[in-house]
Length: 314
Image (cartoon, rainbow, N blue to C red):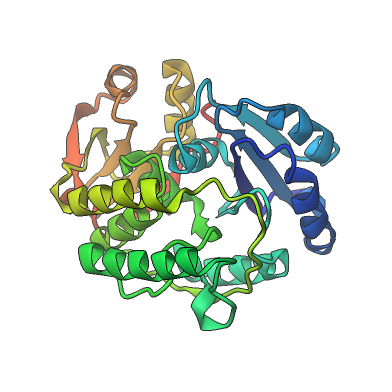
């Protein structure tokens, strides 16, 4: 049966919350048909037994991947890694505790038929208050700063559940720099720069104990990262091919070059195979296979294209 949705679950020291999160997810998986859902658990360099528990909790599912970072890099890096190995046409990234009620997952899938990026929006129909006044106020202030520095009109930028079409997810993941909490804001910023339609949907959220965010320390770094967003040089190696380049042929070349998580950005005049920033060596092999040219491309050239994921190059 064809997969419809890849569910990416980043997890850092989540051994005590994974089982409860799955119990929240279980009835929705059954409703959506487990044969059509791929679950990808990304252990972000945990120092507890997160990966062991993840296997015990999710290992019985028909389509599941377990991926492990060698050391802790941050939620953004974990989500991007999950996206790079996802294979279904729709990707939903959600927190390990499933604090966004899983009953909304079918709504994300419906919305993703028409929009490349579908973020959950707690303030449109849900409780957006945390268990402490400090966290609630800090969250609201940070959202205002995100809107100021990125230009986004979304009021809830940090919701832990976001949906993507696979191709757009890949290009956002390949371009992203930030590994920790600002990755949400960066994805929204990049989506806007690339001309993607963003369609938020209302979700209900439960504040589940166990967050790893430290308001004082993390807020300072988040503000620094936000201020640096517009000064980043978003530029990746690309292989320029004919506009009619076949995705299956690119997939075969990518396998031989040992590169994964890539995307074809098609425009009116050419097709650009977008590679990771460290993927230039692999790009040489792909360029040689097609007689294409290896160079770099930035946001302006990548804007307004269609993004087609190369799904099986692993």
